[in-house]
Length: 129
Image (tube, rainbow, N blue to C red; front, top):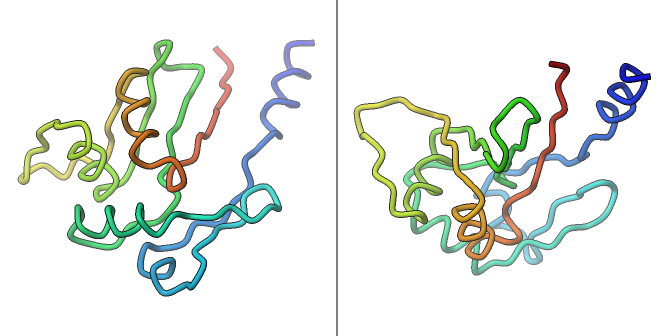
């Protein structure tokens, strides 16, 4: 029974194609297709992101929850993504580090979602223990 539930949950995936910041900035009405539906992106968020990173970034930024993490832990992956989220949260990132993974917690998640509601997307993973 547990394997059937796991298989069912594993097949529930968010279905979206990511676009780069530069692609979205060129669109009159920036959007992504998420689970078959049009998802509008606020230009104000795109401008904020552009002002706060040095390279290009793929959107949406994935906020990953995994059942193997401690409760309330969220993983963010990607060099520019980590730099942006760290800047929003006031965390220091070493310029000499090639760290491309950041873990944040629920209070920080609220702050990130308040600043970037249309350019972030939750992803839930369920693993077997």
